[in-house]
Length: 256
Ligand code: MF3
Ligand code: CO
Image (cartoon, rainbow, N blue to C red; front, side, top):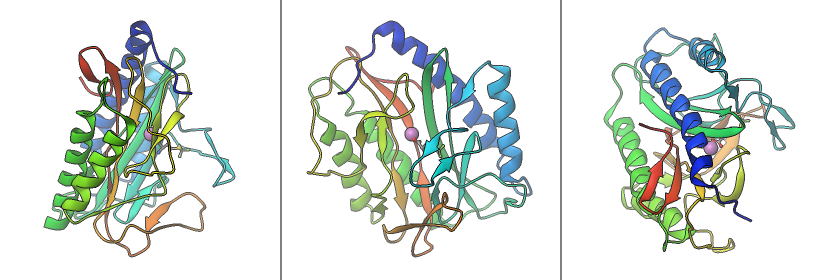
């Protein structure tokens, strides 16, 4: 069942979403040469604490990893797709791509968002990957309307990414969000005909999160049991926003 939220509930999610936006903006700006992914983690944790918010990821149990996640951020560099773990040893250098994913709960309501930034000078392929991934999310957001169906979101990302010669990660997906970080439905970044294709209704809120590889789509998980990487070592980019279906169209909760 897809839980629908009232306008008042969506405004609570909005507060969580705006905090996530502020954190991501700040740590995105911090992601320059010689800064470690641990530095980003520390800054994000402090911002959550100062705002009276709870980290959504720290303590979150992921069955595939068999344990709880230990950090407030996921920081995934270059061929890392998602669930890269912040570390003082991971010092960013010019040419790196870093995907930063974070979430909070505020008053019991969740916000979740991600972005990918280039460190120093990045190559043309990496620039184009970032652009196409971000554009695929923007096109998908336009589909978040009454009268559309879930596959319109999934298919929009898939078509745009494939047309532009990149590949869609299939093993990790977007999700409904509300009083839980992950609610129904799952939102793959491609049309999966094994899934249902529900109509979108006012009050539904979706975390849409294209993960796109510059090379082949296949993924593997490192021995740390968390870090998902591209099998071929190609770059991966990730953008995510929480979007509500409203009478006035798509309402992006995770940006001003
Ligand atoms: N990347 C996931 C999402 O955006 C959440 C990470 S789960 C965690 O939905 F345990 F790694 F934090
Ligand atoms: Co998410």
